[in-house]
Image (cartoon, rainbow, N blue to C red; front, side):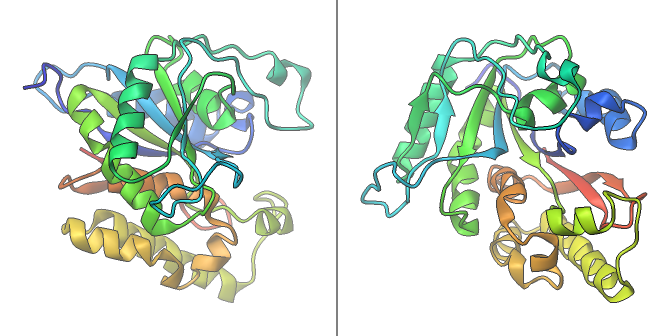
Length: 292
Protein backbone atom coordinates (compact mmCIF):
# COMPACT_ATOMS: atom_id res chain seq x y z
CA UNK A 1 0.00 0.00 0.00
CA UNK A 2 1.48 3.34 -1.07
CA UNK A 3 1.94 5.96 1.64
CA UNK A 4 1.11 8.61 -0.97
CA UNK A 5 -2.35 9.76 -2.00
CA UNK A 6 -3.16 9.36 -5.68
CA UNK A 7 -1.90 12.37 -7.64
CA UNK A 8 -3.90 13.92 -10.49
CA UNK A 9 -3.49 13.75 -14.24
CA UNK A 10 -3.69 17.33 -15.49
CA UNK A 11 -3.56 18.88 -18.96
CA UNK A 12 -2.47 22.54 -19.09
CA UNK A 13 -2.21 24.88 -22.09
CA UNK A 14 1.21 26.50 -21.85
CA UNK A 15 0.56 29.63 -23.90
CA UNK A 16 2.76 30.97 -26.68
CA UNK A 17 6.48 30.99 -25.91
CA UNK A 18 7.17 33.08 -22.79
CA UNK A 19 4.02 35.23 -23.17
CA UNK A 20 2.35 33.93 -19.98
CA UNK A 21 5.32 35.25 -17.99
CA UNK A 22 5.61 38.49 -19.95
CA UNK A 23 1.87 39.21 -19.79
CA UNK A 24 0.91 38.17 -16.28
CA UNK A 25 -2.37 40.05 -16.50
CA UNK A 26 -3.61 37.71 -19.24
CA UNK A 27 -6.35 35.18 -18.41
CA UNK A 28 -4.06 32.17 -18.87
CA UNK A 29 -1.37 33.66 -16.61
CA UNK A 30 -3.88 34.49 -13.89
CA UNK A 31 -5.24 30.96 -14.01
CA UNK A 32 -1.77 29.42 -13.90
CA UNK A 33 -1.02 31.38 -10.75
CA UNK A 34 -4.35 31.09 -8.95
CA UNK A 35 -6.03 27.79 -9.87
CA UNK A 36 -3.61 25.22 -11.27
CA UNK A 37 -1.45 25.21 -8.11
CA UNK A 38 -4.47 23.86 -6.20
CA UNK A 39 -5.29 21.34 -8.93
CA UNK A 40 -1.85 19.78 -8.51
CA UNK A 41 -2.71 18.84 -4.94
CA UNK A 42 -3.97 15.32 -4.33
CA UNK A 43 -7.66 14.79 -3.66
CA UNK A 44 -7.71 13.95 0.05
CA UNK A 45 -8.84 15.33 3.39
CA UNK A 46 -5.37 16.83 3.76
CA UNK A 47 -4.28 17.89 0.25
CA UNK A 48 -0.53 17.92 -0.29
CA UNK A 49 1.67 18.67 -3.31
CA UNK A 50 2.74 15.77 -5.50
CA UNK A 51 5.92 13.89 -4.72
CA UNK A 52 7.08 14.74 -8.24
CA UNK A 53 5.69 15.78 -11.63
CA UNK A 54 6.15 13.77 -14.79
CA UNK A 55 5.57 16.41 -17.45
CA UNK A 56 4.89 15.48 -21.07
CA UNK A 57 5.84 18.40 -23.29
CA UNK A 58 4.66 19.17 -26.82
CA UNK A 59 8.10 20.54 -27.64
CA UNK A 60 10.13 17.34 -27.47
CA UNK A 61 9.77 14.53 -29.97
CA UNK A 62 12.06 11.54 -29.81
CA UNK A 63 14.02 11.43 -33.10
CA UNK A 64 13.19 8.84 -35.74
CA UNK A 65 16.75 7.49 -35.63
CA UNK A 66 16.23 5.98 -32.17
CA UNK A 67 16.21 2.20 -32.79
CA UNK A 68 12.82 0.64 -33.32
CA UNK A 69 12.12 -2.26 -30.99
CA UNK A 70 10.03 -5.36 -31.54
CA UNK A 71 7.00 -3.42 -30.31
CA UNK A 72 6.91 -1.49 -33.58
CA UNK A 73 7.25 1.86 -31.84
CA UNK A 74 9.40 4.23 -33.85
CA UNK A 75 11.64 5.40 -31.05
CA UNK A 76 10.94 6.87 -27.66
CA UNK A 77 9.80 8.26 -25.53
CA UNK A 78 12.81 9.94 -23.98
CA UNK A 79 12.73 10.71 -20.26
CA UNK A 80 14.85 13.33 -18.51
CA UNK A 81 16.90 11.51 -15.89
CA UNK A 82 19.35 14.03 -14.48
CA UNK A 83 19.33 15.28 -10.91
CA UNK A 84 19.35 18.79 -12.42
CA UNK A 85 18.54 20.13 -15.87
CA UNK A 86 19.30 23.49 -17.47
CA UNK A 87 16.56 25.39 -19.29
CA UNK A 88 16.24 25.13 -23.06
CA UNK A 89 15.11 28.45 -24.52
CA UNK A 90 13.45 27.03 -27.61
CA UNK A 91 11.73 30.24 -28.75
CA UNK A 92 12.97 33.14 -30.84
CA UNK A 93 12.61 36.91 -31.12
CA UNK A 94 11.60 37.69 -27.54
CA UNK A 95 13.07 40.27 -25.11
CA UNK A 96 16.52 39.50 -23.66
CA UNK A 97 15.16 38.83 -20.17
CA UNK A 98 13.20 35.83 -21.47
CA UNK A 99 16.52 34.05 -22.09
CA UNK A 100 17.66 34.55 -18.51
CA UNK A 101 14.82 32.80 -16.71
CA UNK A 102 15.67 30.33 -13.96
CA UNK A 103 13.67 27.38 -12.69
CA UNK A 104 15.94 25.42 -10.34
CA UNK A 105 13.64 22.50 -9.52
CA UNK A 106 15.38 19.16 -9.08
CA UNK A 107 15.03 16.20 -11.37
CA UNK A 108 14.51 12.66 -10.12
CA UNK A 109 16.65 9.87 -11.58
CA UNK A 110 14.76 7.42 -9.36
CA UNK A 111 11.32 8.26 -10.75
CA UNK A 112 12.73 8.54 -14.26
CA UNK A 113 13.91 4.94 -13.90
CA UNK A 114 10.47 3.87 -12.67
CA UNK A 115 8.87 5.53 -15.71
CA UNK A 116 11.42 3.82 -17.95
CA UNK A 117 10.61 0.42 -16.46
CA UNK A 118 6.84 0.94 -16.80
CA UNK A 119 7.15 1.99 -20.42
CA UNK A 120 9.52 -0.80 -21.32
CA UNK A 121 7.18 -3.28 -19.67
CA UNK A 122 4.35 -1.93 -21.83
CA UNK A 123 6.29 -2.59 -25.03
CA UNK A 124 7.73 0.86 -25.63
CA UNK A 125 11.37 1.63 -26.40
CA UNK A 126 12.18 4.40 -23.89
CA UNK A 127 15.55 5.94 -23.18
CA UNK A 128 16.89 8.02 -20.32
CA UNK A 129 18.31 11.45 -21.15
CA UNK A 130 20.53 13.34 -18.71
CA UNK A 131 21.55 16.18 -21.04
CA UNK A 132 18.58 17.84 -22.74
CA UNK A 133 17.29 20.92 -20.95
CA UNK A 134 13.73 21.56 -19.92
CA UNK A 135 11.98 23.34 -22.78
CA UNK A 136 9.45 26.16 -22.49
CA UNK A 137 6.60 23.66 -22.35
CA UNK A 138 8.01 22.84 -18.91
CA UNK A 139 9.47 25.96 -17.36
CA UNK A 140 6.98 28.59 -18.58
CA UNK A 141 3.90 27.07 -16.93
CA UNK A 142 5.85 25.81 -13.91
CA UNK A 143 7.33 29.25 -13.17
CA UNK A 144 3.76 30.44 -12.64
CA UNK A 145 2.14 27.31 -11.23
CA UNK A 146 4.90 26.46 -8.74
CA UNK A 147 7.35 29.40 -8.48
CA UNK A 148 8.91 27.79 -5.39
CA UNK A 149 10.47 25.19 -7.75
CA UNK A 150 10.36 22.67 -4.91
CA UNK A 151 8.74 19.72 -6.70
CA UNK A 152 11.04 17.43 -8.74
CA UNK A 153 10.26 17.31 -12.44
CA UNK A 154 10.76 14.52 -14.95
CA UNK A 155 10.31 15.71 -18.54
CA UNK A 156 8.95 13.19 -21.04
CA UNK A 157 8.97 13.44 -24.83
CA UNK A 158 6.33 12.57 -27.35
CA UNK A 159 6.71 9.60 -29.65
CA UNK A 160 7.99 10.49 -33.10
CA UNK A 161 5.07 8.62 -34.70
CA UNK A 162 2.57 11.19 -33.36
CA UNK A 163 0.12 8.27 -33.21
CA UNK A 164 -2.94 8.93 -31.04
CA UNK A 165 -3.43 5.35 -29.86
CA UNK A 166 0.24 5.01 -28.86
CA UNK A 167 0.13 8.20 -26.79
CA UNK A 168 -2.98 7.05 -24.96
CA UNK A 169 -1.23 3.74 -24.23
CA UNK A 170 1.83 5.67 -23.09
CA UNK A 171 -0.35 7.39 -20.51
CA UNK A 172 -1.90 4.07 -19.49
CA UNK A 173 1.58 2.68 -18.88
CA UNK A 174 2.49 5.66 -16.67
CA UNK A 175 -0.72 5.65 -14.61
CA UNK A 176 0.78 3.58 -11.71
CA UNK A 177 3.08 6.51 -10.92
CA UNK A 178 0.01 8.46 -9.80
CA UNK A 179 -0.52 5.97 -6.98
CA UNK A 180 3.01 6.78 -5.81
CA UNK A 181 2.20 10.49 -5.58
CA UNK A 182 3.58 11.49 -8.99
CA UNK A 183 1.35 13.89 -10.92
CA UNK A 184 1.12 13.40 -14.68
CA UNK A 185 1.02 16.79 -16.39
CA UNK A 186 0.57 17.32 -20.11
CA UNK A 187 1.74 20.67 -21.48
CA UNK A 188 0.36 21.56 -24.89
CA UNK A 189 -2.68 23.31 -26.38
CA UNK A 190 -6.19 22.13 -27.15
CA UNK A 191 -6.08 24.31 -30.29
CA UNK A 192 -2.82 24.84 -32.15
CA UNK A 193 -2.70 25.99 -35.76
CA UNK A 194 0.08 28.50 -36.34
CA UNK A 195 -1.24 29.40 -39.79
CA UNK A 196 -4.56 30.48 -38.28
CA UNK A 197 -2.86 32.18 -35.34
CA UNK A 198 -0.94 34.32 -37.83
CA UNK A 199 -4.01 34.90 -40.01
CA UNK A 200 -5.86 36.39 -37.03
CA UNK A 201 -2.87 38.46 -35.94
CA UNK A 202 -2.54 36.21 -32.89
CA UNK A 203 -6.03 37.09 -31.68
CA UNK A 204 -6.42 40.57 -33.16
CA UNK A 205 -8.41 39.49 -36.23
CA UNK A 206 -11.40 37.32 -37.05
CA UNK A 207 -11.73 33.97 -38.81
CA UNK A 208 -14.43 33.29 -41.42
CA UNK A 209 -17.72 32.31 -39.81
CA UNK A 210 -17.78 28.81 -41.33
CA UNK A 211 -14.30 28.07 -39.98
CA UNK A 212 -15.19 29.45 -36.57
CA UNK A 213 -18.24 27.17 -36.50
CA UNK A 214 -16.15 24.08 -37.29
CA UNK A 215 -13.57 24.97 -34.67
CA UNK A 216 -16.24 25.42 -32.02
CA UNK A 217 -17.57 22.00 -32.99
CA UNK A 218 -14.11 20.60 -32.40
CA UNK A 219 -13.94 22.23 -28.97
CA UNK A 220 -17.28 20.71 -28.01
CA UNK A 221 -16.31 17.32 -29.40
CA UNK A 222 -13.03 17.36 -27.50
CA UNK A 223 -14.84 18.32 -24.30
CA UNK A 224 -17.25 15.43 -24.79
CA UNK A 225 -14.37 12.99 -25.34
CA UNK A 226 -12.42 14.15 -22.29
CA UNK A 227 -15.35 14.19 -19.88
CA UNK A 228 -17.32 11.12 -20.99
CA UNK A 229 -17.93 8.79 -18.03
CA UNK A 230 -16.79 5.56 -19.68
CA UNK A 231 -12.98 5.11 -19.83
CA UNK A 232 -13.40 2.86 -22.87
CA UNK A 233 -15.47 5.48 -24.68
CA UNK A 234 -12.96 8.18 -23.76
CA UNK A 235 -10.15 6.16 -25.32
CA UNK A 236 -12.21 5.45 -28.44
CA UNK A 237 -13.22 9.07 -28.99
CA UNK A 238 -9.74 10.49 -28.36
CA UNK A 239 -8.08 7.88 -30.56
CA UNK A 240 -10.36 9.16 -33.33
CA UNK A 241 -9.94 12.85 -32.49
CA UNK A 242 -9.21 13.76 -36.13
CA UNK A 243 -12.75 12.63 -37.03
CA UNK A 244 -14.29 15.30 -34.81
CA UNK A 245 -15.53 18.12 -37.11
CA UNK A 246 -12.82 20.76 -37.32
CA UNK A 247 -10.15 18.43 -35.95
CA UNK A 248 -7.62 18.97 -38.70
CA UNK A 249 -8.30 22.68 -38.72
CA UNK A 250 -7.60 22.92 -35.00
CA UNK A 251 -4.51 20.72 -35.34
CA UNK A 252 -2.87 20.52 -38.76
CA UNK A 253 -0.10 18.76 -36.85
CA UNK A 254 -1.09 17.15 -33.57
CA UNK A 255 1.97 17.53 -31.35
CA UNK A 256 0.23 20.05 -29.06
CA UNK A 257 -2.80 17.79 -28.60
CA UNK A 258 -0.88 14.62 -27.77
CA UNK A 259 0.08 15.59 -24.19
CA UNK A 260 -3.67 15.73 -23.51
CA UNK A 261 -4.03 12.19 -24.85
CA UNK A 262 -1.25 10.99 -22.56
CA UNK A 263 -3.04 12.54 -19.58
CA UNK A 264 -6.33 10.95 -20.64
CA UNK A 265 -4.58 7.60 -20.90
CA UNK A 266 -3.14 8.04 -17.41
CA UNK A 267 -6.63 8.76 -16.07
CA UNK A 268 -7.52 5.11 -15.56
CA UNK A 269 -11.09 4.98 -14.25
CA UNK A 270 -11.07 8.60 -13.07
CA UNK A 271 -13.61 10.97 -14.58
CA UNK A 272 -12.42 13.95 -16.58
CA UNK A 273 -13.44 17.51 -15.78
CA UNK A 274 -13.05 20.74 -17.72
CA UNK A 275 -11.33 23.12 -15.29
CA UNK A 276 -10.61 26.12 -17.52
CA UNK A 277 -11.92 27.51 -20.77
CA UNK A 278 -10.54 30.63 -22.45
CA UNK A 279 -13.07 32.13 -24.86
CA UNK A 280 -11.84 35.71 -25.30
CA UNK A 281 -10.14 35.24 -28.68
CA UNK A 282 -11.51 34.58 -32.20
CA UNK A 283 -9.86 31.16 -32.14
CA UNK A 284 -11.62 28.17 -30.52
CA UNK A 285 -11.85 27.96 -26.73
CA UNK A 286 -8.64 26.82 -25.08
CA UNK A 287 -9.26 24.07 -22.53
CA UNK A 288 -7.62 22.58 -19.46
CA UNK A 289 -8.71 19.19 -18.08
CA UNK A 290 -8.09 17.17 -14.94
CA UNK A 291 -8.62 13.53 -14.08
CA UNK A 292 -8.56 12.74 -10.36
